[in-house]
Length: 140
Image (cartoon, rainbow, N blue to C red):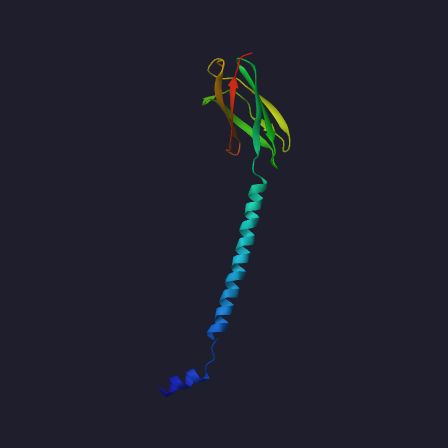
């Protein structure tokens, strides 16, 4: 027992206040590093996000619709597939450079467009995003 008392008298330890301050400082430093790392990852992902939209759909006749697609993103957008009211259309891959506008002509696979009918047009990009637009055919 005498040995235990001598050990406690001669040993030095951090005070609870100093230990708390060190613990808080380490926690804050680690959280700043993690926040900076996650922020960098987010900015990198957001910087390459596709930002394209169909700005107009013009029916050239009862079997063709010409889409105007604007790319406002920081990378090019490649359109891989297109559907009109859920029915696939025949098309080849179509790419729009960043900051530019392009046109794409589609034909419905099920015949021709019906006068005064609304059509849901969806484009699927190479990155898996969907661009949607609703257009009404009013005849020509």
